[in-house]
Image (tube, rainbow, N blue to C red; front, side, top):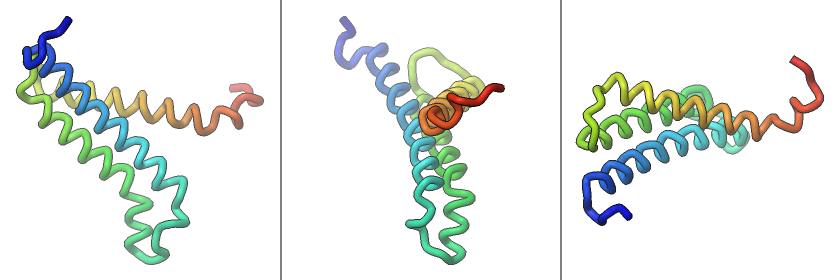
Amino acid sequence: MIERGSQTALAIGRWGMALSLVIGAVAIGRIIRNFSYLLPNRLPGLVLYELGPALALGLAIGAAVGITSDSGPRFGVPVRLALFMLAALIAGATILAIEFGGILQGQRF
């Protein structure tokens, strides 16, 4: 069992929080794209529709890199950035597979 307040528990907590930020940003991006009719019709709505998912993901990845800077193993910034980009790709692919799974079942690639 992991001791409360140990370095292992801190590393797991930091990395878990950072990964949940990235996965949440991907989900927010899909919500913005799916419910575009709730956005205002003028320029702010268009900017949010076009740039919102990327900005949310960029902010989440930046925050995740900052959160994990003091954690256990000392990965460099490029390695942490690559890990969070991989997490974003996996989360995005999973959301798209769930969203379009019914449509794609009858098609061959």
